[in-house]
Length: 382
Ligand SMILES: Nc1ncnc2c1ncn2[C@@H]1O[C@H](COP(=O)(O)OP(=O)(O)OP(=O)(O)O)[C@@H](O)[C@H]1O
Ligand SMILES: [Mg+2]
Image (tube, rainbow, N blue to C red; front, side, top):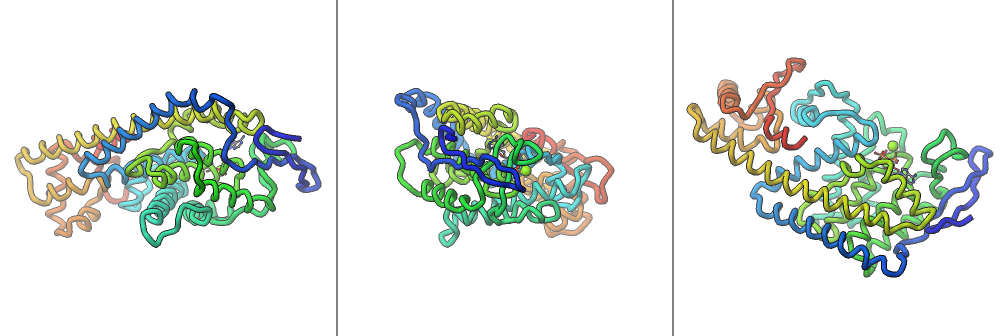
């Protein structure tokens, strides 16, 4: 049996014979005229990315945005998998080791995602780091699956057994990815494609590479998250964006049924073009939203700084604490002591000043140490 972009092979799992799909190597085959039809959405997506790059360059504290956006992405990306945690709890877990009402396992998953993403970006940015490769993705996977929940999912390892998507067994699954013996070769092809010359516009190459990874489904779990990371990493790698500020999870999550349908239709109908349209619309929407949000966050911090400077009891340590908030939007008293390297009474004073200025707000009482959040900033991120 043949799909449109690969072939089905018969394989036996637990005595049952099933049809596993082996995708053709990229590049994707497009019908005549498809690229012409994709030109307008492609230009719109590229323009939105260029604006986001520019916004990133014009904003002095780019590291805040990267910091906040990576965490937001981690949260959303983990949510698709069913994890439920809140952004405030992510920050308070990271800075104050307090989980709030989110479960520690859920938070660990989010924190793992941040660690994996940051690890990959560091590797790509450092001269001696790993290039964008399957090895790099495996290492990301290892970080992603660290800890109790992922331990039996073979962190960092390509699968050696047949997996399936949907259904209770391969025989009634929605999709059976390629047999394990083929996975290494298929990944090798994908890696070669990423490093080969192809006339296809890079955004479309990214869209294709993501689908290919999902179709190969190389890991026992976490394929979606690694595949979404791959999108962000390729945007860096192909220099489509000056800093890592674009994440598609929110878009894919809001349209999960459509997203899955596209994956299926590519297999069975070869409909790359429809997927490209869908992907480009996502890039445009998410980039535009990120640009707006970066501007709003920047304006919020500038306004708050002005308010603080003009306020009555402003002190040097209150200012110092304020400048730390974009990277530590949830703090505790001991946390402030660490951040500012000052004595306790001074911290208390700094917190009070920021509360009086309407910048810090006390969070619910359910916690060990009292928590204070930079609420106006967090509200803009949500
Ligand atoms: N019918 C399908 N055909 C191909 N790929 C699919 C199909 N349905 C889902 N997928 C892909 O599989 C991913 C889920 O795989 P997996 O559970 O290994 O990843 P995850 O990171 O744990 O989950 P999630 O993506 O839901 O957060 C989806 O995100 C999607 O990319
Ligand atoms: Mg999963």
